[in-house]
Image (tube, rainbow over all chains, first blue to last red; front, side, top):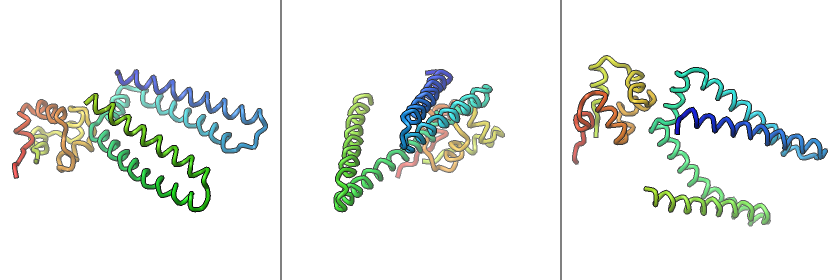
Length: 138
Length: 65
């Protein structure tokens, strides 16, 4: 896929972030809810979208910055580093989540432990499914 | 395995940045290649040897243990 096209698709996602952020913020304010977490989340999404759009405009300003960005994103060493970091994060998270579930159960926080354990198992399931799909491709 | 990227680059009076732009990688990748910290993929090895006008075996020297 052409890099400019890729960036354009990302731009649409950034606009969606802003729309969702606006929707959440307006909904929370209209419902006169005290849910500051959701309200802050909505505002965060809006700012995230704005910053990303600004970055998009800076990158696409001229051909040289666009080419630099394309090289940075497709550079094989950068990709290898990113993949290695993701692998380490995944392994560490598995251990961290397992221990946290055990500790939460010990201190009788069963509901939180169940939610965490479920997300942990979903992550493992996604890993195994991805593994088999990628194995078939390669 | 070691490589002769630095020697070939210096012989042509190129900076690491020039070489990076020529083969569409970052300068950090060229630095890591020259230091032996990163091993190029076959595609990148081919691009580099094509750029220098040499065979891959001349650029990347594999020493059997």
